[in-house]
Length: 183
Image (tube, rainbow, N blue to C red; front, top):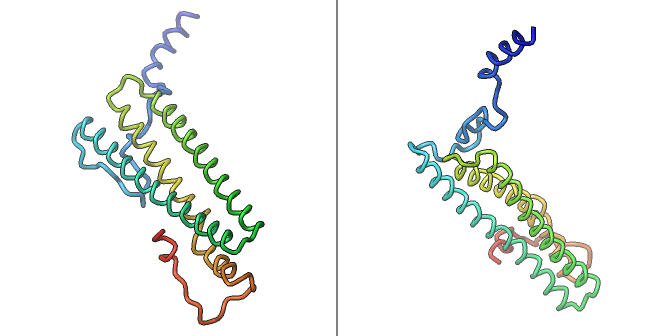
């Protein structure tokens, strides 16, 4: 009886999914998302393409992060010019918290993608998996920075603050996000 059960389970073994294998290739992306590196015909080409994609995404992250920091620094400078202790403390705290969050996020991204990469230890696809994870996670952080630190919504507050906290903006006041993006 045990022998029959053992043989039955042994026969099923090739049909049971290996938990270390992904059911989809790293190049399969949900509809509506860009499909990078589809032209890569070899694993080496795929590795190189995804590495370049990660480098480009990381450069974009640095630009967005620096825009947010520059915006915060301008707010701090304005608070210092107006000698507003409360606004100085607020802006210094905001910058400190952003730096702490960015450092924590970097540690998370690196640890997460190393964990994902480990599932393919020894395989030629491992560099692609790691670069793709790093690029996707970095793109998510860019989205967070551009939404959570929505400079356009903060702009009106800054203008009011710069007008001496009068609590209103004249109707003919025009402002654009580009002024703050040029940092």
